[in-house]
Length: 278
Image (cartoon, rainbow, N blue to C red; front, side, top):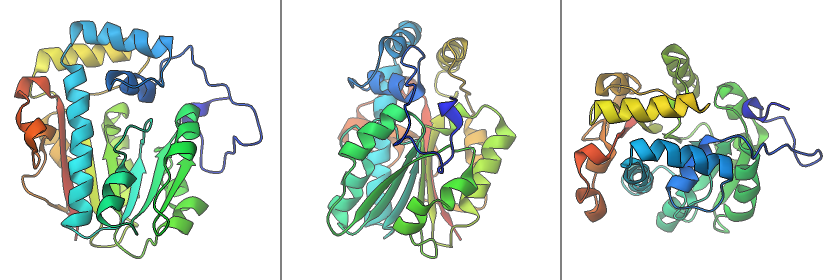
């Protein structure tokens, strides 16, 4: 069974799932780099091999995680958005998105989306929201935007006539084809009403071109398709959206807290930002 490209209609509750723990998965490699324990030997092997040549990666992925927290808090506290569609959830690492936004507004609603069956198991057990809010999880593929937006879980959890925050945190660099990546973003954003937002982060090459190129090549060589982008290419994903200052920027420069301010530019290879739909 090809679990890497399932749609929301696929059900794993009633049939056995091959977890393919002998094959590295981006969510579990990321978990290992964050210091998590929900990973396997194949994931750890890839992470260690890549980090041997790019030791800054642990700092970069942590900076990206902290960007997610600050961006989510900004979306709910400053922009008043209470509905979130988080694609590429990854393994639960506290604070999770729903913990951040429901701490500000307990009525916030969140739908998490990923395609790793291990992520699915953990999400169902751990990603539980407040009694007055709601969280849901669907096992789906970012390559099927219509399937995601029309899934019962999304329709029952979110009101798509009201603003939604689309969160694409550290996911677009796993879509190497540039046209396909832009097409996916367009198909996800077009049905959302004005006032909706896109929070996005992805690997950018500008900060340390040689090290970033080497790290991405190492991932590709180990079966995890990835792509670097320039600052200009990152900006294009926000075309037509009104950018929240300071725009797309290295993630540790986006509304930095004390931890973000302590980081060096050549340690962080992720760019991110928030755009608002007119």
